[in-house]
Structures are given as structure tokens and as C-alpha cells.
Image (cartoon, rainbow, N blue to C red; front, top):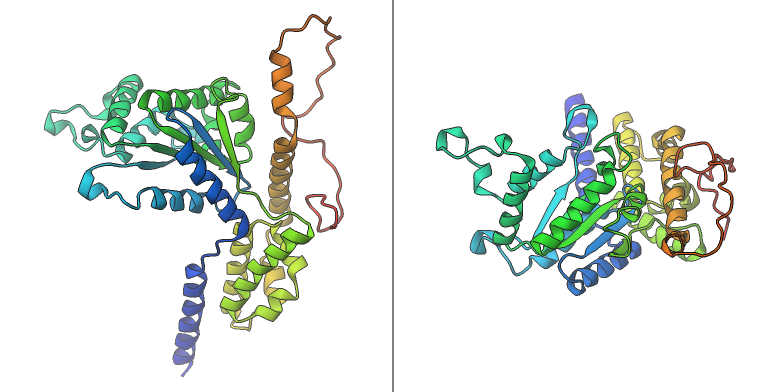
Amino acid sequence: MKYLQRSGEMKSGLLVATRLNALKINHRNWCEALESAYFLMIAVSPGEVICITGPSRAGKSKLINELKKIIESEHSYEDTGLMPVVIMTAANTSTNGRFSTKSFTRRMLNAVNHPFHKYDGATGITSTKELSEDTCRDRLESALAIRGVKYLIIDEAQHARYVSKDAQGSYAVMDSWKCLAETAGLVLIIVGAYPILPIINNSPHMIGRKYSVELGRYKYNKEDISEFALIVKAYGEVLEETELLMENIEFFYRGSMGCIGLLRRWIIAAVSESKRKRTPLCMKNFVDSIMPDRDLREVSLEIRNGEEYLQSKFYEDTQKSNEPSSVTPKATKKKPKGKPGNRKPARYEINNLLGEKSA
């Protein structure tokens, strides 16, 4: 009898998990970013760059996969041998967590089904592992042309920060990708979390040569909170706990900082906790499943720095610094201590990690 009871509970849990997994919410911010990115992809010329950025877990990977699906709607690789869109992830595959440009080039060769990457030494064809990076790059450029690649999308591009200890290394990677887009005659789409912004905006080949799309979180104002509530309601309907979730909108916003990906992760963890304890879903499950304070503060710091960076007058300052001036320069000020790009620590009210003002 006990086994049958457990079996029934497992089936019930599986049903809820299936519903959560099948739930796809095309919310306002995501739809607007999709429309902007698609328009730019169609409008820009080969060799140009589109940057899609936003906080972690905002839905950027889902966005680019949807763009790929739309672009390739009338194309089939099996029928034509063409690949209009290629998506690559900039993973740290080298030793000590470093980003390897050679390894990334070889992985791109594999992604476009380059014939030389499919054979071993027994075939008489040299393996790409034995080739120099320059040779791999030449073969990649020809393979991209043969496959008819129009859009090269590089996801998690912020990992290029770990290419070397040299502060200029990541800028060189961005310049290299930009040159690849120009040589191969394709549109380069760089996708990453906010830490990618300083790298792109300081890369010589990128300055003034890119288009930006932000897939942002929901801010703490009346309009955005209303949109956020609709998303929470959608999850409540799937869980058949609409009233429970809607009564605690403020709590869910604070715990997810308006990021839909964080909200989804949190809800799944809470439901898993209730199933493990074999109790009805309640607010205690959500309290117990919220991200640790340390993780929340790290995420909030990334969001705060990224949003402030986007709102800064970086472009105006850059243009002014590049213009010749006849004015005698002022005495150089002492550089502030601390890591570049990080704000001076500030204290905020409890449950207000982003320091936002009430609407």
C-alpha cells in the first residue's frame, strides 16, 4: 500500500514537472528583444556586429534559438547542405579554465561539418589537432562560405575574458571575431551577460561598429511590476496555486530581482522541495528555496553594474577623448583603488539588493 502511495505521488510530481517544462512564456521584454534583434539581422550588412546582452538567466539563449528557427524556417541542411545560422558557445575548454582561441576555432569547424574534422590519420587526411591555428582559421573561412553561413552567433561571449592574463587579450578576441565576419561576409551576433559590455566597448574594431539589443529584467516600477505579475500568474495557473503566488508578488520580485530565469529556477526548486517533503506547496517552500544571500548579492552587483554601464555617457566620453584638443591638459588625478568596473560598496535596505526606489 505504501509503495502504491509513493508511486502515485511520483506520477503527480512528474505531471507537474512536465507542465513546468512545457510552459513557455513569451513575456514583454523577451518579445521586444526578439523583434529588435530580428529586424537588425535582416537590415544590417555582412561584416557588421549585433550585441545582445542582459543579466544572467534572462532568456538570451532561448532568444537566439528562436531567431535561428525563424531564419531557417525555409531551409533544411539535409536538403540543401546550407547553414544560414550557426550558434557557438564560447566555453572555457583550456587548462586552468582559460578560453582557447584555437580550441574554439576547431569547434567552429566541427559545427559547420568541415570534412577535414571528421577523419582521423588512417584516412590520409591531416587531423585539425595537428594543424596550426592560422590553418584552421583559413579552413574555417572557406567552410563558412561553402555552408552559406549568413549569421554567426557566439553565445556566452563573456568567457572571452579568460583568454589570458593580459588585460588586452579579450579585446584581441573580439577584434578577431569582427575580422572573421568581414572576411567571411557574414553578420556576427555576440551574446553575453553584462560583463561583456566593457570588452566590446573597448575593442578597437567594435567601437562605433555595432548595434545593441538589451534583454533586460523587469524594473521596480508600476508598469514593469504589472508585467511581472502576469508571468507569476502563468506559473500559478500551471501549479494550480494562483492565489498563493499572486498574494506574494512583492516577495517573488525581490527574490528574483525581476529576472524571469531566476524566478523559474526558484519556482522549480520550491516545487521540488514540497514533493520531497510530501506536503502541499506553501510559502515556506519558497522561503527555504530562495537563493543564498551571497549569490543574490553577486547577481545584484552584476545587474547594477551592467545597467549603470548602459546608462553612462561612455560613447560621448570616448568620442571626446579621441578628438584633438588645443586646451592644456589638467594635472592627472590619482587613480581610485579597487577593481576596474566595480562600484564602491554601498549599503541598501534589507530585501532591496539593487537599491531601487519604490514606484
